[in-house]
Every structure is written in C-alpha cells, then in structure tokens.
Length: 160
Image 1 (spheres, rainbow, N blue to C red):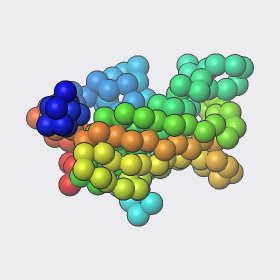
Image 2: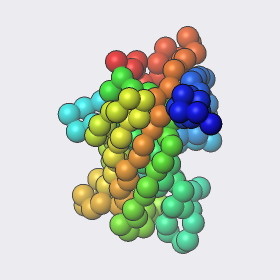
Image 3: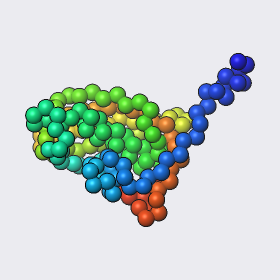
C-alpha cells in the first residue's frame, strides 16, 4: 500500500447520529430509562439523580453498568455543551466504592482537550449526602454530526 493510500485508509468515515428522545440514559421519551438532565455549569455538565431499586446488582447496590452509564452520559453531555458532540470510543472507569440503591448522586463531566475530531473528557459520580467519590472516568469521544428531532428542540439545550 502506498503512503497516500495508507493515509486515506486511516481517515475515519463521517458518523452521523440522531437524537430522537429514546436514549436509555437521557431520553425524555424513554419511560424505562434514567431520563438524566445535564445542564452546563462552571464545573462542566452536571446532573443529579437518585438510584432506583430496579437497577440492583448485589443486595443494596446498583449494577456497575449503571455507574458506567452515568459516566458515559456525563462525558457525552460535556462534549455536547462544549460544542463538540461525539460518540464514545473509549471509556475507562475506576470504581471507588459501591453505588447504593436510593442514593442521591451528582454526576459531572467536562472536556479536557479537543484534538482534531477527538474529544478528551473526564467525569465523576459523587454522593450528594456525604460528598464521597463513587466512581470516575476518562473517555475519548469521536466528534460526529448530530440531528435532533424538531419536536424535542434540543431536549437539554443546543450544542454551542
């Protein structure tokens, strides 16, 4: 393969995504989902949530996949609010302690850096009751073209 062909083979195809309100993490139309609502702020994109019993793993604890979902949504909304909407290519999660059922949490995501079409982010989940860190993550997102169904009007606000 010649050098030009090799470089062209490395170019990622353009990815387009459409928000129709049914996302399991943040979709306002998904009755079974979390319906998280992230808002931009000085610390990044922030949501508060109470962990329902239906997400149980071991007795009294939420499944680790739910914790990972909270972090994935946080990095996605941080990228959206920063004007770099993307899809997650890598999510590295560190669990600090179990997430308890019924626990009130604050989820925060922020953009650390943008390089070409890659958006480097971080996020954490903390208890609103005692401030303890439950989990944190770093993620790399690939910037994408987005479409939001007109009737949703950017459910959580438009990307900048």
